[in-house]
Image 1 (cartoon, rainbow, N blue to C red):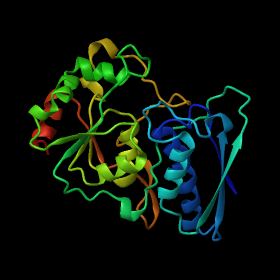
Image 2: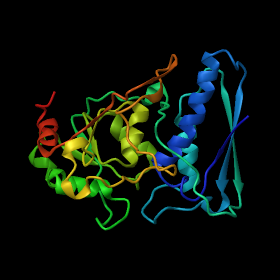
Image 3: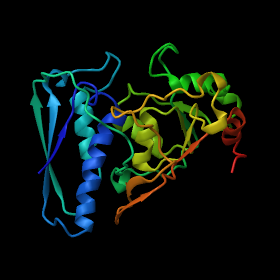
Length: 270
């Protein structure tokens, strides 16, 4: 049996939910690939009782446990087969579970990106720039990329569909499936797009010399372990519906400068 324990922080966002689940599914399949297990596996998931039937905000179209169940139902099943068991518990300690998004396990084949919708998708920042989570928003603003995003229709020949956390995950995924290209900051839909291999441009996450001088030398907020977040730079644990492997994620491109971001929107960047 495999176990996943969500706490009050990891049950809330797409990135934290999928990171916990992806690791377990990838490990099961990897052991199947090695011939170490062959029978159907059980995954027991513990969820804080307080979040049962709880909405993140009145505008959200799903409760936390509904979102979790939708994710569970949408993931591709490892070849050995799995059974899910969800149990609610009274959380008694205020400890954040370690998580990171360095493992991508795909949604089912019929949910993978196909494009052809004749539109692009965009997720914008909503929080104030003073928020502690907005290290990358400062980069986006100081580099001029945020200004481009706020005026995105000026640069794109495609209509723009806005996606956000408040829409039901099924609506988000169905919208991304037919998008020509997805634009997002390094947040929830950045990782969610990976589950369906949707081509994604990340704004506000430049690397190296592209960092503004005001932020050079500062530590970027990462996971509960303090590790850097983001895909595409290192070996990511992945599954191609045939085998598990390690390799750079190919779905995402990070726009390092304002000109690169404009180039992707104008479809001149290669």
